[in-house]
Every structure is written in C-alpha cells, then in structure tokens.
Length: 275
Image (cartoon, rainbow, N blue to C red; front, side, top):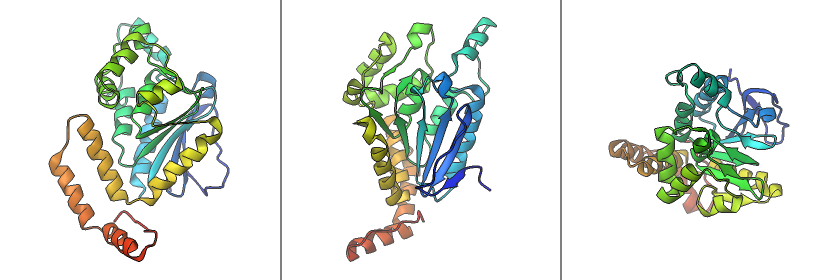
C-alpha cells in the first residue's frame, strides 16, 4: 500500500510540522510538504533520502499527473543544512553519499516524468533556489517571495548541474548576477528575469496553484510528459533525438490521441488515461 496519504480535494491536509517531508495525493495531484518551518524548511541529509523515495512513488503512480512542492512558515526553504557542511569542512572536506546528495535530488526533481510546481509562499534561499528552479512552474507572492543565492558569501563553489540550470533557464547575465553578487532579489525582479513563472497576491496563491495543477491534470499525459523531457534536454543542449522520436511514435499510436481527436470532433471535453 502506498505510504502517501490519499485525500479527496476537500479533505483537510495534515502533516508533521517538524520532521521528514510528507506526501499527500488528491486526485491527479500529489503534494510534497517540507516539514521544518522552525528552521526555515532547510533540507537535512535524512530528508533527501525520503524525498527521493517520494519522487519514485509519485512517478510510479499512473493516476498522478502533477507534483506540487510546498511548505509552511516564514520561508519556502533555506536550502541545504549548512551545519552538516560546516562540520565536514572542519574535519577536512565536504562529501556526500553517492546518489544521495542535494545535487542528486534536485537533478532527479528536474527530470521527474510528471510536471512540477513550486509553491513559493515566502523566501527562497541557498540550495532551495535551485530546487525551485528545477520545477516546471514557480508561483510566488509579492512581497514575501524573495530569493538570494549566498554561495559567494560563505565560500561555497556551486555544483555543476546547478550552474548549468541557472544559465539554461535564466540566461548568462542573470546567472552571473545571482551567483557573483549574492544580492537579495525582489518578487517583481524574479518575475522579470523569468525565475518566477507567476506572481500573485498572497490570497490568490492557492487559487493559481489549483488552476495550473488542474489544467495539467486534464491534458494528455504522454504529450505533456514528452514535451517536458524534450524541453529540459534542449535547455541543457542534450536532446536525445531517438528517445524523442520513440515518445512521439508512442503518442501517435496511443488511445489518448484517439480520444483527443474524438472529443474535438464531438465538441466535448476529452478524458485522457495516459495510454
């Protein structure tokens, strides 16, 4: 049985306010909750393994069409736990378990098969700036959603895939400014440079999240998921053309395209199954 809490869209969502990330699923939407508001939802080493497990779970569930990453408290997230990094540096070096580093989980999130939405209700700091950037949609609120990348303030040279993600998604000049100056950016500036895909009032945040998640849940999964992968690969200049062609052929031969065309002809709403 799934470890996720399956709820109806109107059911109350409960979560542990001081521990590992949790997962709730309502219809076609899954939500991963960061659960350390007392420490600005920093991601601790034990959280990474649980997040990796959650990502595998939602990807294996054919009913799930979209993943939302959310949290509560003052900040969306403060990124990786710097206390562990300081202890490792003091003992002679910084290392991560292979396949279980902060970089590994962010890369896994970026290439997750289903679309992802970051619900940015507050500040986004450190590694969480890359975690949000790895999502397909980033919805923030004014004025609470601010961000800065503090790597240069604390002597950290950022990892390769994060640097590539910043450049591919935000452009060379914006990446340089964010990493090399380490200045806080306002919500409006984040929208201007493309870091945020949507900027709304605090009262409209969940309405906008619901609208995006609902729309993604209605569309043909093979088409949406295939486009996501290809666009990400193109952004990294690493398009796998044979894999793209195989996905295109699968979509062409799917029941979904038959349903889509039949619904268009009948002027009705299609019901896609992802097959």
